[in-house]
Amino acid sequence: MPLSIPTSCEQRKKADSCRVAVKFYYHDRRYDVEFDTSFGNQYYRYFYILPTNYLSYTAMYACIDNDNCAIDFASKKVLDLSSRTFNVSSQLSSFLLEDRQPFNSTLRCYDNEECVSGVCQIKYNTDNNKMDKRGCATDGIARVFVSDGSSLPSFDIECNRTKCNSPETYNEVKEILFRHNLTDINGRINSGQKSCVSPFLLIVISHLFVFFF
Image (cartoon, rainbow, N blue to C red; front, side):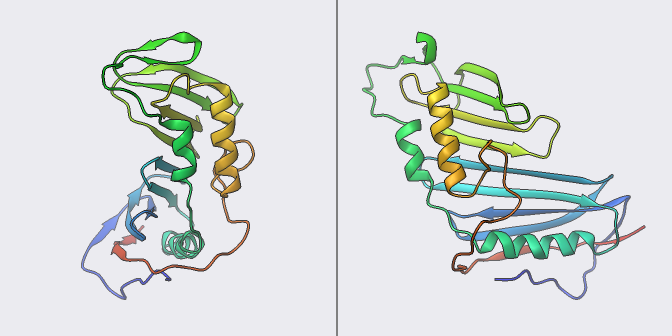
């Protein structure tokens, strides 16, 4: 459903730029839109996936073009993201999780590294497609986190499976996300969708601010 903007509000702020955060929770079939102030232009996106049927997608945008630039962005982004559906968590679970016996608490990561407390991790910088980190992440959980728009766009995998932080796992997960139009072939977050699917009903929670410059 399209974004509904109230015609008036009682909160006003003065700042250099307008900012909006569009947050979609596909597992709950709802989204939030939050307006605020910021400084300078900015466009930052990230999504977070758990293998237990959880997917959230956030787009943060700050602009100085005109008084309505954040509202215009939010309206278009809501239409784009609400027309997408994803069923990706179940496909990722076989790469992120395994049935492990309680008495066997030590997890063995890539290169035979032992991970006594935590999960295996592999993290890539998708700007240059180079690995930033690989090893045992203390107190982590099995999940995929991808961010873009910052100085260091990243593709981060944490997993609770024997030797799961391998280049092969990274390539398999990246391919799954590409097939579902979450990223491009290089692991960067897509700016738009490849094809339309039937929209679903969503619940919108909006917080509106009016900005003066």
